[in-house]
Image (cartoon, rainbow, N blue to C red; front, side):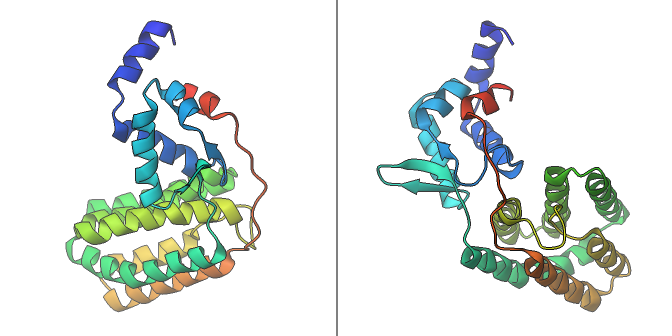
Length: 235
């Protein structure tokens, strides 16, 4: 990318664009838990002021993906086991409701998209694409929330899924180097939703989330981050 096109891209970046790119880097594990997010470096990487970077970091901190520490600046959150359990507890409260609501409005296309997401997650697992598998797993849950059309619960779940992805990338799980929702669980849940069996679907969602939490081993994975300017220089 030449200097002129780089300047043009920076000028067109909104705070939302910067936010999305930092979130993607966290959830893709290009920014490992604990990585310092230096405002000056991020400003240079995106070609914007430190003031704009600070506003984005405050938003990320409000969603608990970033920690802001006085006199030390910002860093990628490293969730504790207690925080992880709170996240799953919250998901257990809201996702059965979202599943039931989804079933009342879901059409054949919605169910087909969910099936495709499961197939793509299975392919990612076979090819040892850990980050992709975790993202697709989250997308499965988020599609259900989006189609359920409860904007309050959808917003809550988006934050919880982001935090879940960070938890899974931080700790992994006991049974595999490929943490995340089990595809078999998703298929069983999809079968219940396709049959419009609300009781089974809600039970399977609860069972699924509990199993996911039980599978986590609370020992942080070894991870490192490249220089943050290099990470965002390639988009």
